[in-house]
Image 1 (cartoon, rainbow, N blue to C red):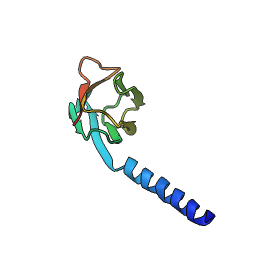
Image 2: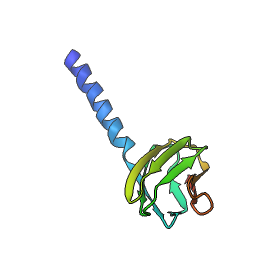
Image 3: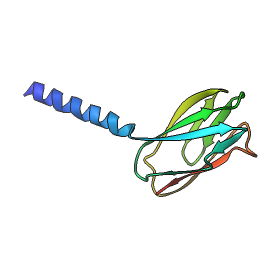
Image 4: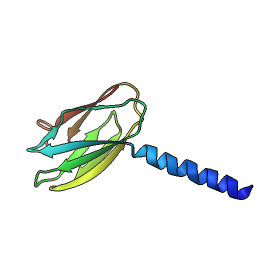
Length: 108
């Protein structure tokens, strides 16, 4: 009985981890701009943004509506988990280059 409960718990944890990483979305920083500027993601799902900063200088991914901030050093990658989000638009920007580094997450 105890072994069955432990196995069931382990299975739930493993399946939860797998579903958390199911949706992975690439985002590139190059010439102080985000590409793509519009990220379309599924609503009500946890998403992993994989941010590839191809510039030599750091950039900070920031969004008040997503409640996220993360500095991505130059010539490196970082990950930001967002969601699950209700359908809608969620703006983000680069804190160090706000005039050019702009984007929006669209959950649909």
